[in-house]
Image (tube, rainbow, N blue to C red; front, top):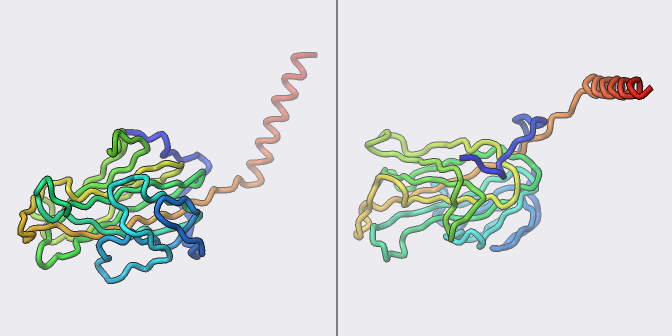
Length: 232
């Protein structure tokens, strides 16, 4: 499926480098432009505490609770859990949020890791990226499934997904650990817990060389002369 907000201009190419974190702060629902390390505040990362420049707290299921506007390279850190299979349980966690990238283009990579690999290596789900909601569900977006375990590779407990080059405002993101093949039990012995991070690296526009500018100017001049000649 195509996203109208996910476009890449022909004058851009892959590139860019990390920039210093912005000193701005941001709270849930705000749209301050920020960059650097952004913490979701759910399950702690697999290697310890989140390296936060901005801690936004738990994202939750509401796409309007957290809206992030970027002014440079950023990494968003978070965690999700699927602890039992009761439809009435409050222990089914999904991370949803909205991203505003403006006219800038970012190369985006999603990484995931099993949090408790020794006790339960099973962890799967999906990340969905789109720009249209039906109720509180993304429609017409791109779905990327991730999984580990017997049907994939029992030794693999992490992975990365290239989400491509994204731009525009109102981009919707959803990390859903409930989607997938694994089921859980109420005793939590088979619960799924994992961490994730989303890396966004700004792609710098490629400037046209002087020779190309001269060529374009020359072609424009020839076109003008032809039109003038026809009128004469």
